[in-house]
Image (tube, rainbow, N blue to C red; front, side, top):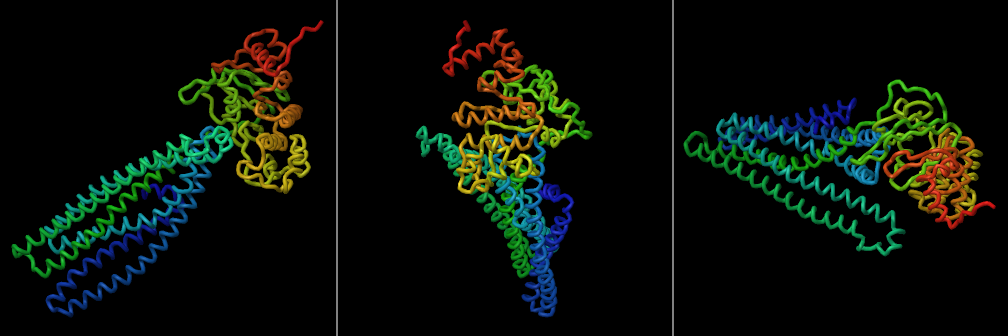
Length: 577
């Protein structure tokens, strides 16, 4: 664990070395103070007050220096804890922005939120709360063992063996507690995810009468947490009882050994009483060590969860990024991709030329959304090449790639900020006129007039103050104000009312005038307006591609798709006479 702390502190690891030196010397003096009680007690019983005074003087010096060191190490521990928490948050944040966007999903969001809040605080404070008693008790117990060995090697030998036994028992008990904590953490994470889900999707749940205790996923998660918590409590109690019994057993053996030595006449009874008093003090830090050991394992588990994120491979960045050679061009060249043991795309090839609109159509699960995510490099392809701007996306820096793209997906997230700032995030240096024009094109001006604070109205976490269609309009305005050469668009008009659908369609036409648009098309007018239509099969292959007229002439899956969509809209096809 100390090594993990040193890795976290990095260039500031000097704080850890200073802290460890201070607490080690403090522990040495702490143990020495206990050892000095033996000659003081013997001198007092013998009536040698001069010797007792001399040893008391030494003890006073040790106590004064130890007190000063205790203050110094406590201050150092607090400073190190604050530094560790700050560095952990920075390290997590700095590393997560380098991870592939596909790494982030709903489950990971719950894990990361728990680690970032609970884990970093627990690990950060472990320096003072756990490392201090650990090092202090180890060093002081070792010092006492050395003292016992000096006074009588047999008692010292028993103390060494007993200490080894207590360490073994402590490790076993801490493993029990740590394993219980691991299961508890997983149950807590599941509850955290289900509570967020329960709160976020109340409209859906209430619509189907599932807003109460009958929502099984949350109820099951809470029941699992309760069951796991009871088991963890039993294991923790068993571990603590084992530690307590082991400490008392070792102390009993020390008393028996001392009594045997005194009975044989090898030790003055007065000296034996003083040594047994020291042995009692020896048992105290060992008992504390057993308790700290369990907490240390829990802290180490939290630390492993943090380091597991820090050790997740970052998205590879090229050492020598290549500049864009054909701005606005997107090419998929024999692309294959799969995840979770399932093949999603196979041998997909098509080209979106600059300034054209390409529509992706196909059944659910055919890989339409996956294609747009691969273009944005949420993941790296398993085979083939994706070129954006004429260059393999893997040969571009993430910043250069994202500078060419605007993303308008169905799942829109707005930050808990003003409407104005949520649009401006598309391009922070945009002028006021550009932001207003983008909002006008996206159909947001009526929304601005409706909101009580106009542009400065806070939209709430996730954009809760706006409807789903209005949130998508904000996302479109972001894309418009960014004015990127390539726009990836999930049209997703099926869930929109006619007004929002109209604004989305108008925005697509506006974007297509200045950018290369790749749209996951749902609306017939969007499909027919595309310069190239890529038809995907349920197996994730390109079945056909071309213009609407070409595809209708060839028949096949696209013609069937078109006939189903026309029938769904209530249109009829009539021959021209």
